[in-house]
Length: 247
Figure 1 (cartoon, rainbow, N blue to C red):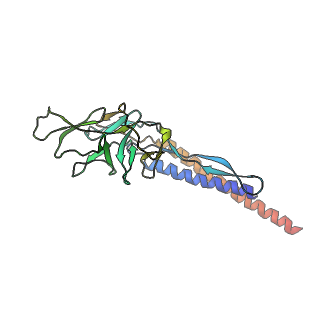
Figure 2: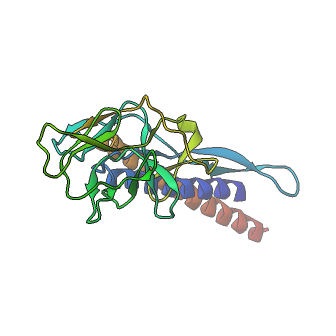
């Protein structure tokens, strides 16, 4: 009965982990640029002394759904969305370069351009800082930031920086606990001049709440089934023990 119990136990554990991933997706259904996480597990033989007769469920490295979310037009000059594939380059809290699809930018008191979560936006020459005060900020399709110099007429625009954008093979990046993507080799990705952005718009999360709710119900039922199997294993074991005592 230990084989049945082991299989049910490992299956219930993976159902709980999948539920946590599912709940995190639902919590980020309104997060700009969020990519839904995918839960993955597969059957593995447990090797040890003797034959590998035990099988358990093993969680594999989670991947993401990289489909683009819907574009929401905001009209705000510092809102930008990547059109198609690609990422914005930002400086993570640890100082390393990371990548995101969230384009809800803002200016700090010193003129630094940062994301809504506080990561500095990286340009071709490092973190971007705009000269203050600035007027009439415009971000072109190639990520170039244009501003109206103080005292200049509205028709005069000056280029101050260009946002670094990358377009790696999604198999070469992984998502961290902070929600940012990084190169699996730990290095920096090269800028891709072919990535385009749309100003005055944001990319919404690609989480489908209805699908996530349906998946959550299915996972809960699977978890209950695993618990019933564990209870059945216990009952069978008790019956076997009773028979042995009878003899």
